[in-house]
Image (cartoon, rainbow, N blue to C red):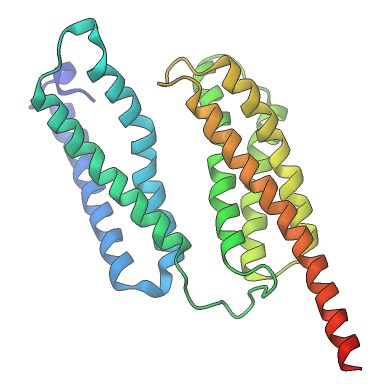
Length: 248
């Protein structure tokens, strides 16, 4: 909450706002230390860091930059820009570190599918998560208006299915071709809805087309990776048959 609304020394600020900020800062710092000290779990810790830093970066920075650069209220003082940079740069660095840790090369898991490797499943999981941005942007715009349960099941359940399929693909616990088909089907609802969202825009976000564009790119990436997962299995079988034939 803005300090001007409740006052920096108000009971609400002291009881809720300040402890919340302290917990956020301490939590970010603790996870960051674990990320650099305990590299064996870089995938999990990197994903957590990417979410923790990415959410405030997506939700606050663009709107705040629009307010500071708007000519409606006169020139913005340099101190406000300095404060904006102090708030934004750590979020960008933290997000980059989280993504780097999530995609960094680590030792292969015992059950991992050797055909797919580690890059494709790791990209599918965040792509499915980012494709939900369009859905939550629409829900936030509706506010008190009713939202159909069937729509929520389709446009939220499909990306969740994509993320679960990516996790199963990473551990190699199910058939690659079947998981690829699920990823392809699960990417289509977000792909269609994001196209509509780009055209209509989101009123509370700046730029208004950004949520739809992010959702479109993420669902497009998951669709392409799903197609790749299905084709890799067939190519692997072909190469195996060719190798056996040559040995015979």
